[in-house]
Structures are given as structure tokens and as C-alpha cells.
Image (tube, rainbow, N blue to C red; front, side):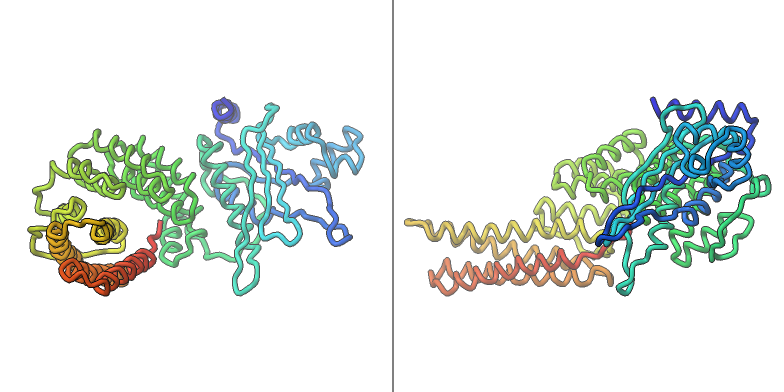
Length: 485
């Protein structure tokens, strides 16, 4: 209801002022001093230079910070007979009266503090619409400070905070406000910022900053480009991916919600949303979204392959096989690679097709999961053989047959692993996995010899090799390439 009321209020405001630029009046809400080491300590941090530029770049409202020395405040005080103390620390009711005198449409209160010896800023920011008793938007939390060469980078942390607050305010409250053209903005004092000079259009600047790796600096310009060209799907996708790279998952999800409404037949947004959910550790939600998208677009190969991967990652090989079945006979490289994975996942290694499959960093995690399942099963079989051999009356004939089958299966696993051709990012993972497979094959051979000779030294060697193989498999997991969002 609060969200609906806020949107209705904004819509009413727009109609009332005839698309005029509203004013946002910002009040600092300072925290009281505290004691630290028996000395008074002021925890307050000035957010003005770090928040104002990003609010101005939205071009949604005229931004002004309240000052008791401002002519409007002084005139108001004279008319009402207010003291200097009242003007310096206005009550909430007085803030509303001052905002009306200012002609403001919105009032914001900002509190940003840093406790002694803490590596984070704490903030509380609220926005009221004139005439509303409760805030129409608010946020609070902590902003961590990163360290570079042993020194805290306070400025970067505060700029990140200011940028995040502005973008959330734009997405959650001001999304219906029009973005004014640059030349129509009411001039406001600006704080100097050492940045690349801005061209007239935000898109070229955003693309330039992205090429230079300046992700945070590119974000407001890319957001502005999307606002200016809301029907450009490529721009919107670029914005979503930038949100993800900056770990702004909530904003990415909000933008994806808009995107799937604007472009219901563009499979890229469903795939991106599923990837975001997977990255956030929500595999069930990711599969559900892919299933819904595939039902709407059953001919989409990309969606079908993504759902196959998600199901196989969860260990549901039968469901993955059913998902792949409609396109399983296609000759494309992506489909052929999934057929290869499915052979490993279903342990159907008897008649492997010829050829090799490039193992990119994006493919590595799923490949290793299938490979790990194969190797773990083999290690479990060797443990079973050891346990059965120690029974009071073992069936040595049956155990020897199983031992020979384990050796043959180990060789087939090695052949399956050899089909994967690593790239530079996956070379270490593949090497560790293949070494693990080789040691398990040796362990299977030692176990087969033990079942023939019943020499305990053979069994001990098999057990040692099995343990070392599992350690090598863990090293393969640790060597997985880290994927960027």
C-alpha cells in the first residue's frame, strides 16, 4: 500500500505542476556526540559531496540541502519569530513548514555515522512527500570500507553509498517522474568531481567507461542512457549485467522484472534472471523461471540447454535427459556437448563418440560435477570391495568379477575425461581431475590384484591411492575458475 500511495502521490504531483521540476530539500539528521577514550567524539559523516552529484545526475528533481543561513530560512524565521537554535535544529514538524516555504515537493533526512574504530559507515535515509505523514521511501544499513595498501578508502565507500542510494531512489520511488533534459534543469551549486568530461549523450560515455573498467563511474550514465532509450533491449541488458557486476542484485532483479514485461519474447532476460538466481544460491527458483520461460517459448534452444544444465547441476539426470530429448539429435556443438555430459551423468561410457569438447570457464563447474560423480562412485565401489573382502566368508569369485569390472570402468572414466579439451582458465581443474582419475584407476588395479592374491599390502596400496585421488579431486574443485557475474 505504501508503494501504491507513493506512486499515486508522484502522479498527482506531476499533473499538478505540469511536468515542472520538483524540488528535493535535504536535511541532515545528526546523531548526538558520544564518548570515546573519555573524550567527546562526533560520529557524523558529511554525505553531501557524495550524494548530491548522483541525485543531480538522475535529473528527476532539483536538489537543495537545508541551511539555516539560507535566505529562505532566514526570511521564514523572521516571519515566525524563530530562534537561531530552532532554525539550526528544526523539529520534524518545522521541517515540513520549511519545505513548504522552499516550495519543495519532497523532503529527505540523511544520517551517516561512523563509530570509533569501525570499518563501516552506518546510514539512515528517509524521504517524505509534502502532505504525507509517513515516509514514502526509506533505507538503512552499513557501507563497508575497503582497504588499499593498508589504508581505508573512505571516499570510494561514501561514493558507492551515494550512488546506491540515488539509484534505489530512482528505481523505487521516482521511476514515474520524467527525466528532464540537461538544458531544462534548474541550476544548482555542484561540488567539483574529478571525472572524464561528459559528452552530450550518456551512452558513448558509459561505453567508454566500461571499456576502461570504470564500472561504478559508468553506472549513472548507463542508467541515463536506458531512461533516454527505454525500448533498446541491448542497453537494458547492459545495465542489468552492470548491476550484477557491481553486486547490486536487487536492482538487477527490478530491472529484469521490467525487461520481461517489455520484451516477453526475448529469451536473454529469462536466461540472465536464471543466472542471477543461480549466483545467489537459489537453484530451485532459477529452474522454475527457466521452466516457465521454456513453456512460453518451447522452440528456444538456449532456454532448453540452460534448463538441462540447471537440472544436471542438481543431479537430476533423468529430468535433464527428458529436457534435452526434443533436440538431442541436432548437430550443433552446444547440443553435442550436452550429449557428452549426459553420457557421463548416466554412466553410459561403453561407446563414447569420437571428438573432443572445448571446456571453457563457463562450462567447468558442471563438467566437474559430472566428473566428480563418476570418480566418487568408483571410489565407493572400491570401498565396498574392501568391506566385502573382510567378511568372514567372502565370495571371492564374485568379488574378483567386480574387481575386474571396476578396473574396466576406471579406464572408461579416463577416456570420458580425455574428451574434454581445456582452455587456459580450466587447465588446472582438468589436470587435477585427470590425475585423480589415474590414481583411482591404479587403486582399482591394486584392489583387483588383492582380490586375486589376498595380499594385504595390495589392499593397503589401493586404499592409499583412493585417499590421494579424493584429495586431488578436491584440488580440482579449488582450481575452478571464478566466474564474473
